Image 1 (cartoon, protein in one colour):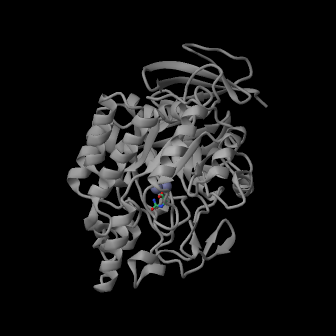
Image 2 (cartoon, helix red, strand yellow):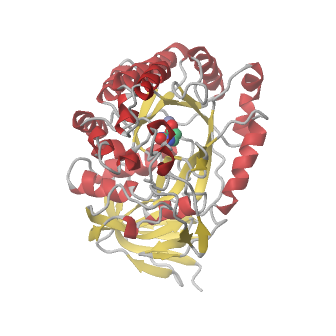
Image 3 (tube, rainbow, N blue to C red):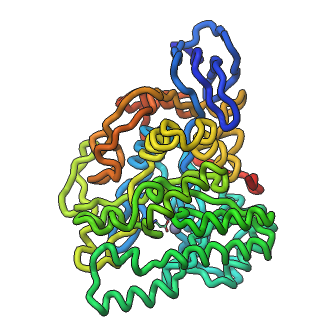
Length: 473
Ligand code: URP
Ligand code: ZN
Ligand code: ZN
């Protein structure tokens, strides 16, 4: 049995360079990168003509997240497996803040994640703040959590008052933590939702019509102002509006420590998709916008105004009334049908963790909108740096974890539900013609995906204790 793996003659693509070399892997680590390497007894993998890049890092997924009398339909095994089939070897999930405190909340999430198949970290949703919570924040660092997500929407559920966000950010600054912001105007949304329902508007398009784009722009700028006032870094999640890109660019030009995250769905779809007969499939928060918004988001990525590509993977079944078999098990998880008569009851969220890298390679790299190096930066290296994982993750360097994707950039794939391992009954990208797809995926030196074969297993994924003071890019 070979003890090491030698990946020969691949076109290595990192965030900054592209070159041909061999990679020697021993145990879980990359130990050497150079041309013409030789290692006795190593298993040789010929990567001639293939792109070799660090495993993807998706910093924004919601697995087994309770919502509206149901739960997001991928758990910490099925979602991880789907991630791996798309070239992603690290994901970060959001812990729900329970009244019993952070230790209890994290413990619940750690138990859910015992079935992890790729490496994973956690963010803490900060949805309640008081003196006791403030006192407990340093303990999160001991649990390996360096990031807090705050919300300016979902009033009465997840929203924090601006003053609470301000106080949390002051503490975050002292602790070297990063605040992540969900930016929408919760007050305006509540008024518009009440008015829409009173007028009998119940269809999916009203989800977007009751969540105005200017609310996102204003709330993003509000967050950037708090970053300016506290000096604490802020990361704007799931950007969906042109004005957010403008505000981010403005704040960054002023030297405020702010960064942004795009997600594929906001690059390709618009409010028009909500008007389709199956429009509920596209319901997520924040919602799809217009082509002009999508175009500006692409510009933000190409011009490095936006640093990261996440997914906000939070899948639900379109028809959750029919039992499906998954890996020999019969399951039924209520889904989008919960809101057939009322758009406010449609669970918010979409599948995407597997789609992220293949879709963005085709639409971004193959179509010349971003370079292969930008692709690696936003998919892997930048999230590793921002979220305190670099250079263990996100790098092709001696000493880094051997999380490696061998990518066939020429292969043509007819994408859709047949290729999907995401545990739901639809793909947003049904019938899309892709150029480029992962061929082999290694997690810490172990082959977990080989074409359509799965070699991973529940429990293989390791919890990542992240380090504070991540980079501000
Ligand atoms: O619709 C979405 N995005 N659901 C997940 C929760 C969130 O705000 O990210
Ligand atoms: Zn959010
Ligand atoms: Zn989210």
